[in-house]
Image 1 (spheres, rainbow, N blue to C red):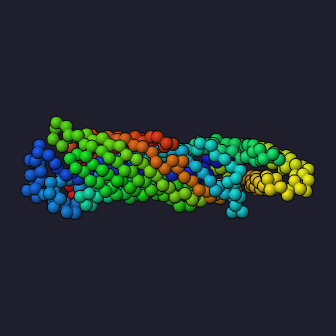
Image 2 (image 1 turned 90 degrees about the vertical axis):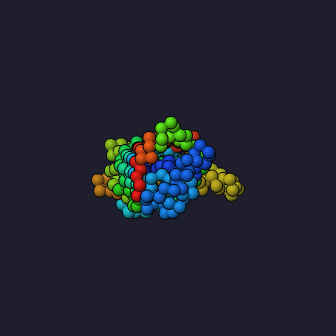
Image 3 (image 1 turned 60 degrees about the vertical axis):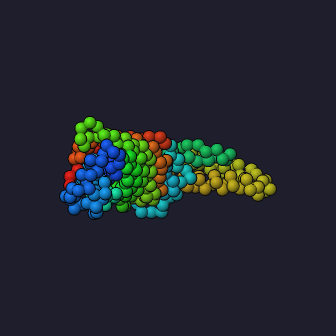
Length: 373
């Protein structure tokens, strides 16, 4: 089966780290006393952040209060899928969770994002997210059924790779604190990715704590920052959708796979019935045998009903539709990140970041421009 559009829509959940590494820094040390004294007497010229002038006069060096950044983000993340239900032509939904197994499914995405931001308070940055992406899903799965000995075997398998596009929008905030060039930032954002095959936009929530240090370079306002941290993603698990059958199956070999599957289901059902009927009445009351028989009957009935309904839908494949629902989740919620930023001056910054460990890998490169507001 070629579940290209179905699974690509189902599995779209990608998470963007849009943190911008600037912060309000407490000036400390005798060598920085001149800068601290100048901040105390110079009038703060901008409306934002709120209480900006009072904080600056107490010896804090504030970044420009508004900014605009463009970022390229790439991520490859393994996912888990369960509670899969599929129906055809708005008919009954078939629970396939017991008979469909997924093997190392993942989502790869490349995205361009625009991030406008403001410092609402001296220690609180608020930003928006606007992005276009091209996700790719890579799926390996199969349909499995048991025999009389409760040994499960695969009767059909498929591997797919589907490409499509999505639009993302979201909001975020970053509380920060900085002292003498050392800083802590707690970035968090909510985003929604709009995909035509989904009933509603896919929601994700990101939390990214970072601990870093900024090192001054010889030229005024020029510095380089390095940091380490974590990246945690939570996604809305339940997904529902409705698509055309012709977008789900490779119609060139779908009928043959359905026919072969029904034959294998019938063969295994005969084996299970023969085994059960050959047991004595006492053996049929044995809880272990009862559990084995009920599991086999349930799984074979589920596979048979699904394939029979699909067989009927194939007769009108051009106009048939598929309804689906499932629960999805990242295989690992956390991964480790490292990053660095070169500040050319207080207006222009270049940033790179990488995330790894666990089952998610990600990279980000960005350019930021800041100005007073």
